[in-house]
Image (tube, rainbow, N blue to C red; front, top):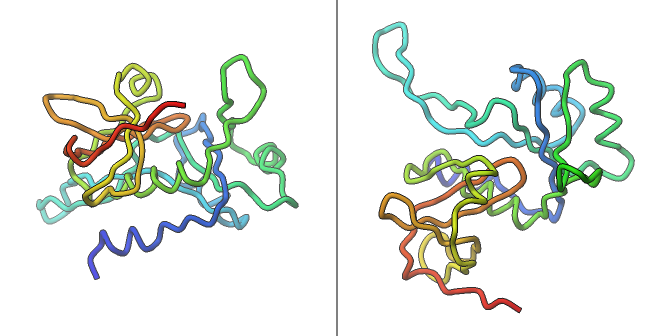
Length: 189
């Protein structure tokens, strides 16, 4: 079984929505461990980076894409995420739908499922963007009908003379290289 297959097998869509948390600390691993110990599922987009080891050789290690962003699966009804955040020793905020709104940005399970699949660290033709950069990318809404991304939807954008499928969620966007011939436009209602 390859690493990519193990990664995909670990991504399960159980119908639960997710929250995006912005951290005001560089202790991402400590915060992730804190929430994991409380029984919450966490997700951090990561990629392989070559680091020189003590032997002078380069070794690939997983590093977070963004050091101040953590995704947490919506807790069961008996737990309040806001209360858990208030009880931490870390400065954290839940990303809101809009800057002026007090409503929390709850990421639907299907969007988060596809986003986590697209964040597979084994995929090399991938780009990560800030929310602002992702919103600046013009592109048509498409449904992928063929190929390894079959069944996903997002925006088809062009960057550096290549086509990418862009999936955007609060706080981050990810683009995977794709052939535009695999996509069909989504008809607007």
